[in-house]
Image (tube, rainbow, N blue to C red):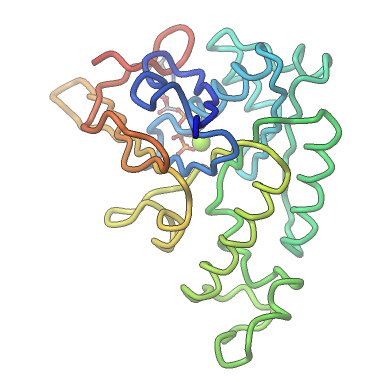
Length: 244
Ligand SMILES: Nc1ncnc2c1ncn2[C@@H]1O[C@H](COP(=O)(O)OP(=O)(O)OP(=O)(O)O)[C@@H](O)[C@H]1O
Ligand SMILES: [Mg+2]
């Protein structure tokens, strides 16, 4: 069966992925602070908007204007695309129930018939896992140690949450990038998300004297023969590119 591909918008990356992300996949983009996760995801939404695949960008960390400003620096005019109904930037804050956030994402996707979705970042959703009331009702009391409180959720709760939201995104018919804040030894806050997503891309940098050597590694991509190994990346006037 031929797998339909969704282009990443990052020059040089698609050819490492048999042409792009598998359609409808959920891909984790993991990296430490300042590794370029947001820029990478903005390029994904921008490329789609320019090629008849509208996209929703959900930001938990930054104001929509700040995000659009980052995009502008790389020649991507998100305000214009938003006016044309090709992009929808949603800023989420003051989370009470993750269920409400999910409903808001669904509305935004339907509104512009989005084909692409970015969650920046999934770490912000994971932290609030125990506020997901509709999910918590299904969790046996012995597993749920912290009902409705903002104490750190257990692995079992995070795994369940991830399965639920991955199913939900797939059901919306979008191809999704989940941005994750990497820790030293894991690719996401709790070290669970990377196992349940279809793909995993890791952004990193190394300090070389007065330079930063930035890199990208495709750790996994289901249904895809990947071009493994660490590839050098750099910021250009259009955003991130694979240079080697
Ligand atoms: N043209 C450029 N050349 C080199 N570095 C740049 C350029 N533009 C931005 N950067 C650097 O890239 C980083 C910001 O990229 P971005 O916001 O995409 O990263 P991030 O991984 O999302 O960061 P955060 O962890 O804060 O969310 C900053 O450290 C910034 O200094
Ligand atoms: Mg960011």
